[in-house]
Image (cartoon, rainbow, N blue to C red; front, side, top):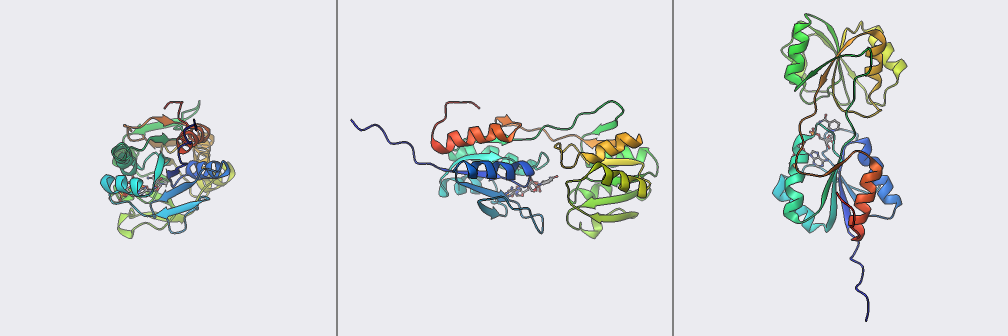
Length: 262
Ligand code: NAP
């Protein structure tokens, strides 16, 4: 009797926009697994992963579910940024609806070290309230272009606003300097920035990862407080913290060999 044929290999959809998503695309491509990476299209000149790429929103969970079916996707890895809440929620709804297994790949958050002076807050509005309690500090604001409006009404603090692309002018606080830049950043570079601008407090999301962590080391070295925005809660998908774990999971799904959990 002829043994049953192996299931046809399927493509893996990587919801991207992060260094981990690019590393996963590379590793799966190296392993001969077909990947499609999806980017939101927010950044003017995104770093593109290897393999096929699509750009732009799917139009919500129902349309994403249809897209997964129409494009013969065998597995989804949500490797979006820890603060890309809506995309993750959409994938968590769409993948089961389409009968496609899904995994969340999320780098661990940052943890305080001896000498750190961190204040944890729930969102960017709370971060601005924390700044207002400090009076009129000179702030290195690294929380990104989106959500900047939370600081737009703060006329007391002075902000060095660092983003990849220019924000909407109406989102900027009255007293600011804009610095368009993209990581990775070095400790020397961050110390230079802090010193040159007389920075007194740093504001960041808990993005995690090594590429943008030097600002935390710089704040530690200069004894500066840091306001850290907590990650939004996640539900609905098994999760791993490393690219290696995601590679093993996705390879198994793409080849139909799925003994392991999650
Ligand atoms: P978001 O608020 O969760 O997403 C808003 C909408 O944008 C989603 O509902 C989806 O539209 C679309 N979208 C988001 N990520 C997408 C992707 N990878 N592929 C296709 N469509 C996507 O996300 P965000 O915070 O604006 O982040 C956008 C992208 O930038 C993400 O890919 C994320 O990984 C990256 N990023 C975000 C941050 C951050 O701080 N938020 C930082 C660095 C990088 P539909 O509902 O129409 O599908």
